Image (cartoon, rainbow, N blue to C red; front, side, top):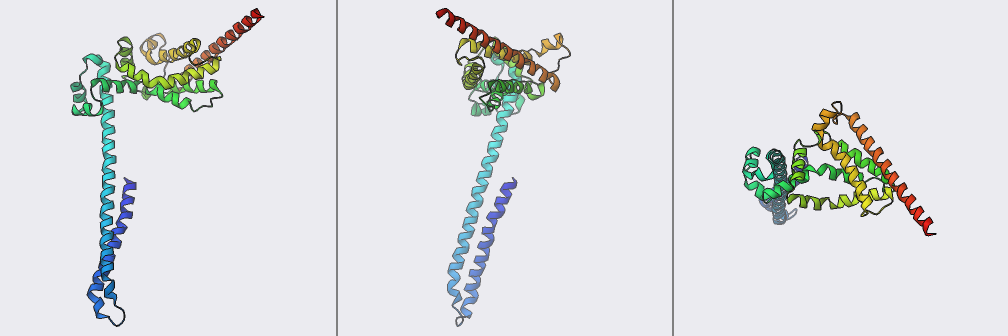
Length: 295
């Protein structure tokens, strides 16, 4: 808004110049003929007049363009707010009753938004549910992207950054409270939305396999690489999605506490890297034995 006002102030200089030029043209028309011996100033009157008109027309056109642009930005903000409101409300409804029992009418009623907004922004209930699932796993997706900035020549450090970032986003304050119930329902009774979400995760999954493959000296598509990847993910998901059981088995654990969260993250990193080192050593020993036997 501040930038828009500054833009308007600059544009208004055209209006000021246009008015001054029009007044000059009027003055030349009115008083110019009285001084023919000095200089035929009245001959400049049409030029001054039309220049002023052009400046005022340019000012009006630029004002209109800026207003249209500002309205477009405001419209984008409204659309973004509608999407976020619908996703948040739908997440709560889907978590409570599941995909099959949830209705678009109930979601829109709770959100205070017309049903047409769902069809406009998401197409149908499945499209809305797909976006809710994507929001549920956004923390992991963003964590992988952040960790991907790490130096690729140090895969262990990149893996450490990834796991720590996951745990930073695992705390309750950093994610919707409907995250776990929805994912639990989806894993128990998968919908077609999960296929769409899985397609979107393909790039990060490949990156993660490549990272782990560097650590253990295996190709991204190698079976052992995939096992190691899912072992790491399984540890993280245990803490993310088993809070109710952990609260009963380990009451002192608080993942909203920075020290507890860092301690768990460091343990998973150390445990995983030690396991991967063991895998790499075992594979190396097997390769040496095979070579020796062949000789």
